[in-house]
Amino acid sequence: MTETQQILADLEWQVSMGADEVVEETPSLPLWKRAADKKPNTSLSLKESSVNPIPFSPKKVERPQNPPLVQARSLEELKRQVVNFEGCPLRTTAINTVFADGDPTSPVMFVGEAPGEEEDRQGKPFVGASGQLFNHMLEAVGLTRDKIYISNILFWRPPGNRTPTDAEIASCLPLVERHIALINPKILILLGGVAAKTLLRTKTGIMRLRGKWTTYAPSSEEDGQILCLPTYHPAYLLRQGNAKRQAWNDFLLLKNQLEEITR
Ligand code: URA
Image 1: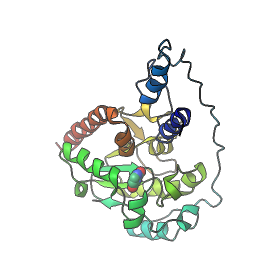
Image 2 (image 1 turned 45 degrees about the horizontal axis):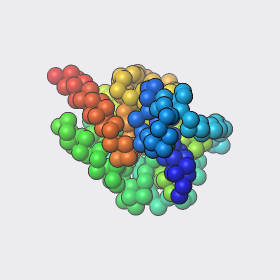
Image 3 (image 1 turned 180 degrees about the horizontal axis):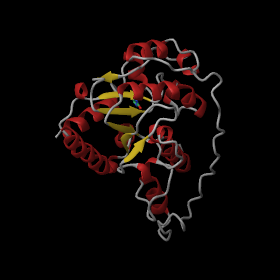
Image 4 (image 1 turned 135 degrees about the vertical axis):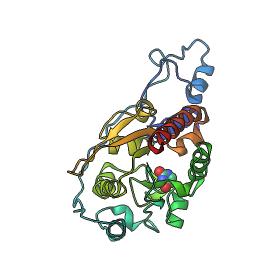
């Protein structure tokens, strides 16, 4: 792979992980540094950088063909509905449906993006490498997997772990919204750009959203709003170790809020 191809691959990966915005004048990412190292006079400012910008081609917004009518009155009923749901094409390529893990009565619900290879194999969310890091992060703030509830925006693994399409996300959204309504957590933590953009219905990227409390309001007539905190996806942290400090701060916000609620 040439250096240019490597830079393009790195950028594509960052965008797919939700790091799709410029938030600082000076980039700290290794790929920019590598390019700059070759040209000693090149400023690291993104504005003035001699590194060519990557052409951005906005994704066409696809609409789901048959949005599901979600009337499930219990978690068991919803799970049955998800397992039998034929509106998301990912179901046909996945080994298992990955519904959720943890305690459905927990005050905290986490929502990630989509199952990976190991999750697909075991039929459980966050059991692969990012799941291991997630468990460590929980432990760091005195939580364990059996004290929280966790699920994803998609119930099936996208082939090769590719980024899910808008249509795939939209097809599962009514099921996810019903899922959140049935769990009715006190706090909703959104892991990564896909979960944050989808559930907050925003185009703002995770770099700007993370670490700021907001509220999740379902699009249907479900009642109430839920306190919500977007943070980085653990898979992003595995690749971008220097973002762990910010993620740690986010988990401390969660810890403090949980203490407030359970006081
Ligand atoms: N990444 C996710 O977003 N969810 C999983 O379940 C595993 C990895």
